Image (cartoon, rainbow, N blue to C red; front, side, top):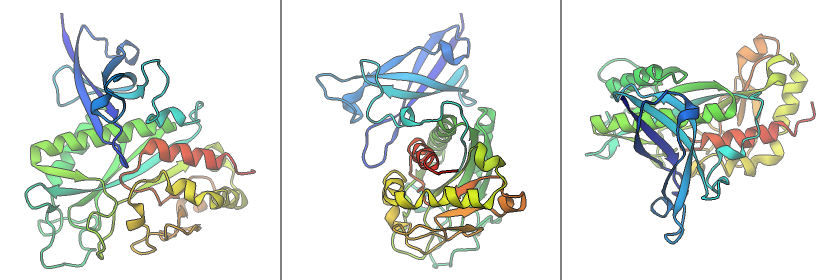
Length: 335
């Protein structure tokens, strides 16, 4: 009889930004298939998701990946349900209207790595070196914690997560990974599992993953975003500048609705500086990194067949909420 370790991962009710929780279920002779992952439960009163007198919440498995770091291990992404089987109020995945997986998402996840002893980004320059030399950098004076970042990439790829690249970002101790999926729910699943693995790997290095969009406060250092690249069949095939402009314009009336779900403290990042648009504004343009939505130059060169990039989501944003709002807005476009 073989034993398997199923690590159930879920999002808690911490406000304004959910944290990840997980616990292990040991099962016998597991097949490795999602349909054979049993429903499970947890104490919602300990995660800000239920009252003590009625505390049971359910965990519904929605995605499974092998866990390269544990013998016989699997990573199980789950949705939180109420005891009666209905989606919990915190379950943003259940709000995504993309049953045919027509929407494709590529998230660019930026983050900082902080030394837990100094409470500063690892390698943070004490001499106030201007940002810039750290972007896509190499060398001991420029790139920090590469060993942890490389381990994370290897583990994600071994787990079957569709990470498409990594790079050092513009500030010391700041990095990015990119993850793509066909289908909005799967895209969210993969980002959350990638985040979980990064947090867990950081335990071995004594480094804290900081998802805050502007951890260095009111300084001349860039913040962290999670740019959302998205497309549907229309964007991938239309071949029409006018159609792209119509879809971009569909976002203009819903600035507040998007910002409301694009991550907490995003006002500290979206200032109109450091390659961002102001949080109250809306703009779009070809190859414009200071716009709310960037039309990639590759899309134009391919005859207006490609995708759009919403640059406003913050690094701590919930990809489920972000995808759900983008899909809802795109569906209002009269194309």
